[in-house]
Length: 260
Image (cartoon, one colour):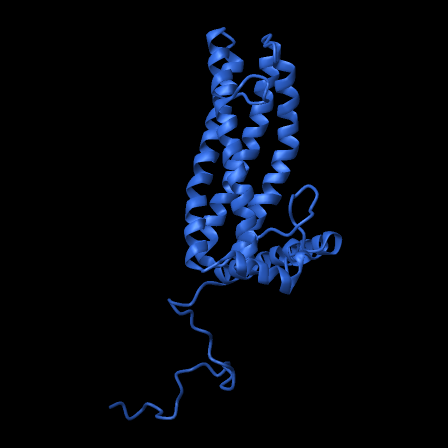
């Protein structure tokens, strides 16, 4: 031991304030300042995006109410994710997709009839006129008379909606078969018209007719498949005509045209 060493001497500088907080130590697990700043900016952007979505939705509701369909001119509210029970969302989604296939097929069918007319078909004028009428009326009526009733049926689980669907959905299946066949002068560029176009070397009309025929077949077979599944569900739930009449007497006809 050095007896000349001052035992009270400090190894710290006298310039250091003993009351200052000790310097912060950077932990290996603590994120850097740049990373924290980036995270804060990301959260701010996320909040701004959500705020913009809320404002857009509020503006849409202010202008159109809750209606969101069709997008270009909202007349009704349509949201499978919000209104249909989770167990039945895939089924209703498939039916909606089949309706979209139907709508696309009607467009292709009309274009095919234009080429059938220009190819010199004796019934080309009737085909084109009928195809335009189908595009306008079938697209609207199919949505309102068989898709919308079964949409409401699964949403509300009321019997009368199912009977609406079975009647108009069954009619649509017969109409699909009629369009698949494709008689001349009926407005269908179906199988007969397609074969006739190819046999006379009208390739564009034949190709469009083939696309229309496939479209009619896909949506027809798909609708037939789900028609059977919906009938099984309808039977399992115990829906009867007597129950439908009771619901109609209790709620009135107006209830079947509203969302409530």
